[in-house]
Image 1 (tube, rainbow, N blue to C red):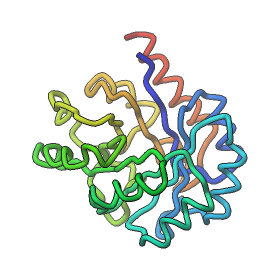
Image 2: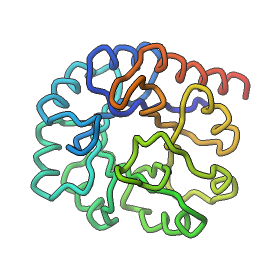
Image 3: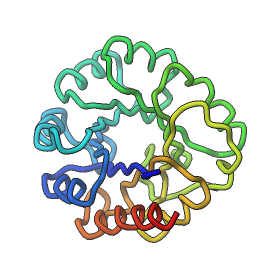
Image 4: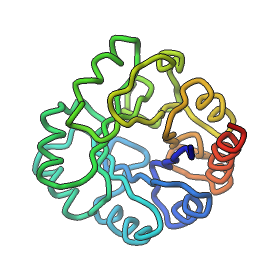
Length: 214
C-alpha cells in the first residue's frame, strides 16, 4: 500500500511546487504566531489557492478560540483542519459538525498510557498524528519518540507518524511502525521555517523507495 506523505509548515509557492512535484499527498500551513512557520490567514489562503486541485491542504491550529477557528476556516478554506494543542474530542466533533471538514488531531506520545487515551478521539477525529511530546512549541521541534510504542498498538482511528522524521530515517520509522502516513516539517528545512526543495524531494523519494521495497 502506498504510504501517504504530508509536508507541513510551508510558506512559499516554491515549496508547494516542490512538494507537489515530489508526490506529496498533503501540504500543511501553520497558523500559530509563536511558530517560526507561522503564516497569516491571508497568506495561508493565497497558498491554498495556489495549491488548489494539485494537492490537499491542511491548516494547523493550536488552541484557537472558537471565533478564531471559525475565521480561519472561512478565510483559508482548507481540506483538513489539524489541531495541535490540548483540544478536546468534544471540541473537535463540534468543529467537524459545523464545518464539514476532515479533522486531524496531533498527540504527543510519551508512553503506552498516552496511546491508550487516544481512543477518546474515536468519532471526533478522522485521523490522529502521533508526534513527539510538545516542548516549548507544539510540533516542528525535530525530535522523535520511541517508535516501538506503536509496534503492537491497536489503532481505532486512521493515523499518521510525525516527529523528527527526515530523508535519512523515514524508512526506518516506517519499518518500525508501518505508518500509513508520514508527516515532516523541520526534517526538510535548512533553518526553522526555511524549506529546502532538494530535501523535500529526498524525503518523498525515501518513502517511495520504502514502498517499492516492501
